[in-house]
Image: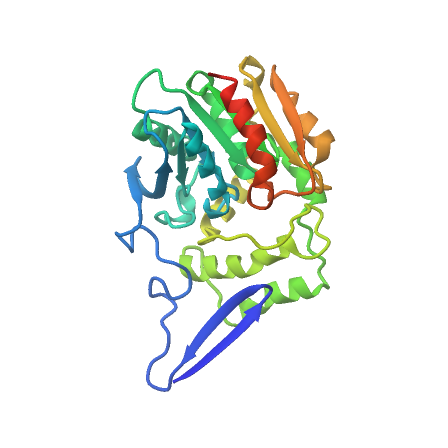
Length: 328
């Protein structure tokens, strides 16, 4: 047996070549990590008809801080710095959203925004220990959009929220943000690397492992040198859910969305964070999103970009803690 190891766009790849046995790319764990449906030893909760990879830190009776990761289709691994809030008395909850990370996969046509809101409701119910326990949402990127969608639908259920560079609270803002970020130069080496994998792996709509693997390879363009979002480099993740990403792209393009219709009725103070180095977001975009709320506060996190929670948590932490403690 020969062992070949190579690195492509910042990700280490390993291939085992044998005359006797070929690697089965459909076998769980061969291309991307196993999910909770494939590995029962992973921490998980069963809610709303699915099984989510989830873990918590801190006192179960403390105020809940539920971290909502980015994507759609990413996972919470690069947000684990937030668990430091457990040392301050908060019960910090992480979960990989349905179909993402190490959570159970589902077919592409099953995903809806309402289903994601129902999942979040189920997570809150699962961890809430009393009716008086406060619940805060801490959303990053797509997770911040999801937080807005939840408050827009269920404003009486959430005691406060932190929005770290939401991609856009409605279709118009999302298009505006997307126009200036994550652009691929069709003649760049990065794009060639992304397209290179199609020569070897072509997955159909619900061939999850193949599609997830390809998306993981392609994700490295986001931190390429000179990227508009000021991302310093790679951050850790378990698995990108390709079916989830495509499902929500289709929803956005075919149905549109608007998470802002009731936000001005939410009287609670909310916190907006943006990275100094994200040229696609900045103060002007933060102000556009914050304007939908009655009592927003906007704070710049210096010397970082879109992945501020991973790369500059030391600067994010005191701002977030001050905000949360203001409710005590």
